[in-house]
Length: 372
Image (cartoon, rainbow, N blue to C red):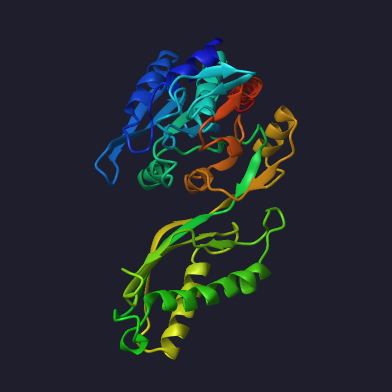
C-alpha cells in the first residue's frame, strides 16, 4: 500500500460512528501534524447523549489562514454483517470500507498534502477536522459558536468525484405534532381524528410546495426550487380507535438566497387556516434544524483554481455540507473530494484508488498555490 492508502486504512479501522467518541481519529491525525510544526488544538464538547467529542484545529503560520482544509471525522453506522467495514479492502481499483469516501479519504489526503508541502509554506494554513457532521454539522456549529476556525478560503471535504461544488442548498427540519380526541371508531362524532387533521394540513402543504414555492428558483440547482418532504409519520393506537395524536417530520431544503424560515412560516399559516375552519384544530410545529445553504461565485479564485486543477466544471448539490458554517466563520468555501456521494452511506462504500491519489495531488497544489 502507498503511504496515503496506509493512513486511510488506519482511519477506516477506527469505528467513528457519530454515536461514539471521535478522539481515536484525532489521536492518529494530531501527532502527524504536530510533527510538521502545526499548532494543534482540540476544541472539546459533549454531545446530547453525553459522549465526548472534539474538533481538531491544526494551524501553521500567523494570522488568518489563506486556506483551510476541512473534513469531518465521523461516519454513519454500518451493517454488522459487512465484514470489511473496518478493514480497508482493495479490489478492482477500489478501496472499500465505512468512511472510505465519506470522508476519511479526504482527511487522509489533507494530511498527506500537508506533509508533502513541508518547508514550502510562507502563508498560514489550517487543517480542520470536525465531529458530528453526519448528525447535523454539530462540530462545525460548535466552532461557529466559539468563533474558531476562521480562514479566507476553505476546501470542504465531501465525496464529489473531484468536482468542485460551489453551492449547496440548506437543510431544515421540524417535528410536527397534531392533537385529536380519542373515541370509538364506530362513532366518529365522539372524537376528532388527529390523522385526518394531519392529512388536511399536509394536503395544503403539498399544494403550497408544488405551486407558490416553485415560483422562486435558482437555475444553478436541480431541482431549481426549495423542496419539501415528510419522510416519517406515525399516529393512533389501534385500528378501531379514533387517533388522538399524530406526529411527523417536516423537512425542507431551501435554495441559498431564500430565508430558511420561509417554509416554516408557510406551514404556520396553513395551520392557522385549518384552525380557523375548525376551532379545536391542534397542531404544534417544533423547529429542530435551520441550516441555510451557501453559494460561492463561479469566478472566485478558489473555484477557478479547483476547476483548472481537477479539469471538472463547477456544480451545485442539493445535500447539506459544512460549507455554510465556514461562511459564518468568514471563509469562502468550495466542496471537493474523492469518491461519489451515491456510493456513501451504504454497505460496500468505496473510493476509487485513482481519485484518492489525484485528490491528494490537487490539495498539495492548492496549499502551494494559496499558502506557498
